[in-house]
Length: 388
Image (tube, rainbow, N blue to C red):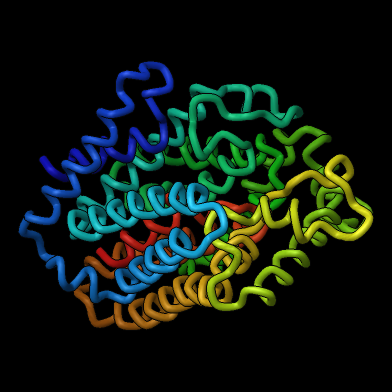
C-alpha cells in the first residue's frame, strides 16, 4: 500500500493534476509527507541506516547540506530557501524509492509508471508529435514545461522503456513496448532539442556497446534512424546543423558567454558558490559581459546542470555531481562483470537492469550539459533506484 502511495506521489509530480483542480495542491504535499513517514517505519530489505550510509544516500545528504548552507549565507534568503524546499522534498523522494523499490517486480512497476506518466504528458500535449515543425511548450507539466526539459526527461525514461521491451515475455507485450519506445523517440525529435538528440545518440550507442548481438543492434539502429528521418521536419535538421556552427548561432554562442560567467562566479566563490537559486541575479547584476545590457542580454539561466551547480554551490557542488555519475557507473560496471556468477536464468534481466540505470544516468549527463535541471527530480529518482 505504501508502494502504491509512492506511485501516486510520482503522478502528482509529473502530471500535476492540481493545475486542473487547484484544491489538490495540498493533497499532493500531504500525500508525499504521509508516504515518506510510512516508508520510514516500514520494514523492507533496505534499512533506513543502510540507505543513508549508501554512497548515493551520502551524496543526497551532502547536496541537501550545501543547499542548506546557502539559506544561511546567500544574498537573497528567499531564493535559497525555495531551492531548499525543493531539494528537501526530492531527498524524501529519493529515500522513498530506495526504501520501497527493493526487488525486480517493484522496479519493473516503477519503470512502467514513469514511462506511462510521460506518455500521459505526451497525450495531453499532442502537438509535440502532430506539429513537430514548431517548438512547443508543455502545458500543465511543472518542471517539464519547456520542450527541452521534457526532452531531457524523455531521454531518462527511454532506457526504462527499452528494459521493459527487452524483458517482455509475450509477443503482444513486446509489440506494445516497441510502440512505446518509438513514441518516446519521436517525441524527443518532436521537441527539436539538440541536447536531447545528443543524449538519444549516447543512449543508443551505450546500449549497442552493451548488447550481446551487435549485428542486430546495427539493424535496430538503422530502423530507428529511418524512422527519425521519415518523421523529422526540416526545422529539426536545421537546428541540428547549428551544433557545428555554435560560434555564429546566437543561442549556442550566448551559452558560451554564460558558462564563462559561471566559471567566474565559482572562482570568486569557490567553496560556497553564489548561493542556490542565485545564478540569474548574479549574472544580471555582476557577471554580465562588458558592453552587454539588460536588453542585449537579459538575466540568464545557466543552461547546464554542470555550470549551474558550479556557480551556485561552488566546486564542492560540481564534485558532488561528477561523483554521483562516475561512482554509479563504476559500481555498475563491477556488478555487470559479477553477473556471470548468478544463476543463468536471471543473468540477462540483472544485466539489463544495470545497463538501464547506466543509460538513464547517461541520459541525464549528456543533455544535462545544455539544460539547468539540477534541481529537478531526475537526480534524486535515479539515485534512489541505484541505492534501492
